Image (cartoon, rainbow, N blue to C red; front, side):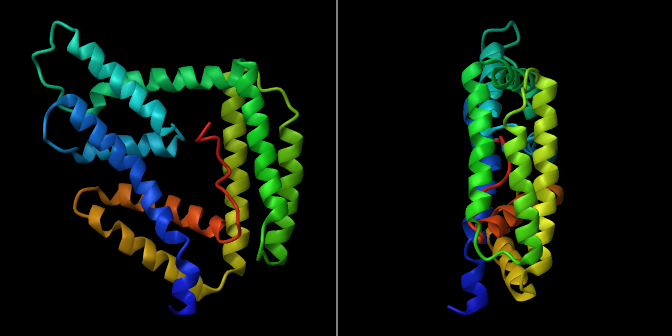
Length: 234
């Protein structure tokens, strides 16, 4: 295996992991709906909206299940659910419950603090960073350890924390990319495109672009032993 392709290997599972979010929601909705018809472009774009908003997969599935369970016991249960949009309100309700749990429960608050400390520890152990990346990683580590000691007492505060992490990750990715070998970056993108080829005929271009962007970020950070800076999995 040549050097560029070997360096790109972390990007390959990254693309598949990002695609799993979309594919799992599709399969769950189609199975629960009881209709073999696949998703429309509008449905795929709705999933993209949830992914960009950082709604965890399990939260989306909970909302979809609640919506379809409600439909099954409604007066209109004989009518087929025609679109994933039917579930949007319940997904939003499930997301609100998740936010409240993270904001108000002591155990959940501890989980947020633990996640921030884990991010900081990972940045301390990061490998292969250049001068700019090392500086940004150090600054981010200091910020993360400061943030974990702040009180997150409301859903809006959790949203603020999420926004901070997005900005911190973006700055870190820009620093890493600026110092990365262009051949490695090109190989990573080529591998990601290859891995997404099976989805090209099924998903709108905007959805594929989003998956590609998320996979690229995950793969580039993984090259240096770093996770995504996100509360997505809490």
